[in-house]
Length: 185
Image 1 (cartoon, one colour):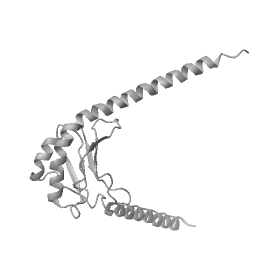
Image 2: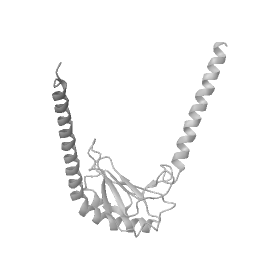
Image 3: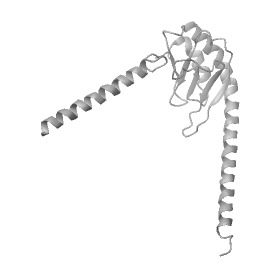
Image 4: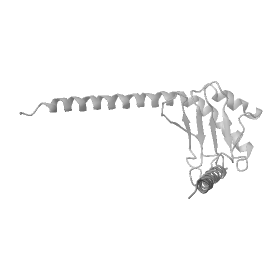
């Protein structure tokens, strides 16, 4: 095999791999709830009050009825919220009425920090704006009222769990140290 033909084979294989990756990305993006089917409506003036109510929260991700891998909406009675703290893997669930679940309302709100406005990602072709606005206006005060306390509770629970884990590891280490030289030679 000469140098020219091996280069040609390499180029063909590389092009095929790149095409496959491209098709995969597009197909994932075009699924219901995929990044190519959602739009950011967070900057709309009609949602300014919602932005204002949720801005002070120590949260960077808020989702309601996010689609699963099969495209179905799950958890019609809960909003999932994650804090902005890096390295903190806590989710807070806020119970909400299921009024908007049957209307197909679902959204994801994200931001990079507490100082940024929320991006409100929604499938415009499937979620009527009046229903989205009504749901957000109903959820925002519920979330603003209960999230700070629930976040404190979750953090306290995580701290307690870390303390118990550290204590268990310490006891295991002590037991192993005692066992090391405990048998007669």
